[in-house]
Length: 112
Length: 112
Image 1: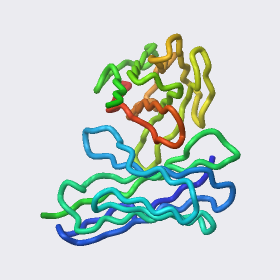
Image 2: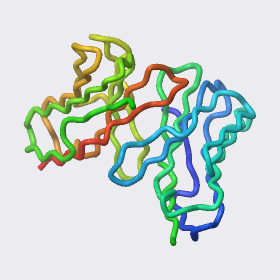
Image 3: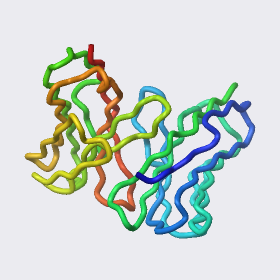
């Protein structure tokens, strides 16, 4: 079992604030990293699939970066809105295995 | 849109019962997965399948079995339910690691 850590565990921000959180994973044998958003009472939804060191992906106000050499990925949300409130999960797969390992998530609450 | 449908949203079963959790996807995905999610722990993989009649154990297969007789359906079976199997169960499917997973809405199982 591979160790995937996310920080912080939870976060409360004011509407309009920008925020970011971290996913840390083993720095060797990288294969792919996924980010998901999981809103209460809904299914986790894929946000980004990241595969190359230095990848930067963007979807609206949300973006993500990847550093495979040091084993971390950042997720950024610019100008947070209440609808951004959710748990954000990352999942890591190494090239020596055939499954993704999930972190415990960062729970984001955006206060209007 | 790809849909992954789990048969029950909430389920209450008695200790010792045989429990079936059904998952159906409608996009011809080869890969299907069963996870459980518990507070403070990331999603943990129970079983997965890369093809019909094929199955592989994940990290926590004990007390579970699976069945994949048709490509679109992946069933999780609790042979004799126990209270420590009370959890949220999530089914997912994917066509390829590059596209991320599509998750069902989850089944919250309580074993009493």
